[in-house]
Image 1 (spheres, rainbow, N blue to C red):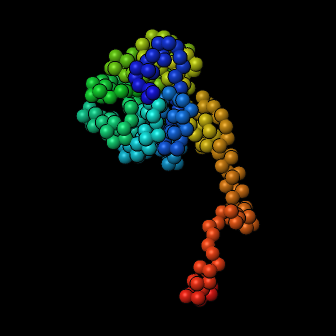
Image 2: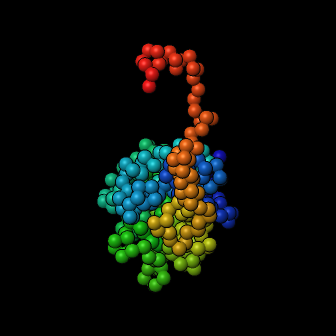
Image 3: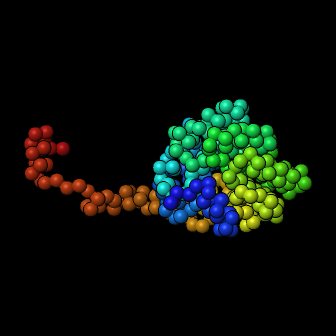
Length: 281
């Protein structure tokens, strides 16, 4: 059965941990779905881990809609959430609503997520009132990397901790069904989780949240340009790919591949007829 806002809330209420991973393409999303993961975030991190950009700011609506559609088509169980990219919600309420609607109508996702600060609470509420499921985001906002001076933990001092708490409460009031806590001290994330009705999902927010989120290329060991301290590498798919590609190259160079079993067959009579018509090569 497809996960919905109601099933995610039920997991929170019953203290059943929520699992979430990122995905950006059909085959990866299919594996995530089949593994029983509860939610997928089609993150603007695709700008980095798929397209090779230094940060998430280059993700566009067209890029994200394309990736989201591929992921959504793979999921008959996992709830798919689209990440609103930089510039898609920072202007007016109507533009934010139009962009959120694109994800639902064109990509067929189950909800949207954006890094809405206090300046964007009205937009969050407007999207919710459209009937679109919305996930909030507090703590580190990668889209504000320039203003923050880098990817830094948020909430270690009184001012940033107050901002995390107040934004989370405001997002809940605006109608989000879940909130992602990114790079937030574990004690603070656990405190806010206890105060909120809606589920909280940690990506560097510690074990006190309602669920956990990781970037799938980090989990698989496929992205080594930058790995945050909260990420866990469960396997070395990147290393396996590298050794496999090297083996392939060696076999081509030495004539091991392709072998006879990798070749299509034809009768000698056909070849003789071709040679007769066109001459020998």
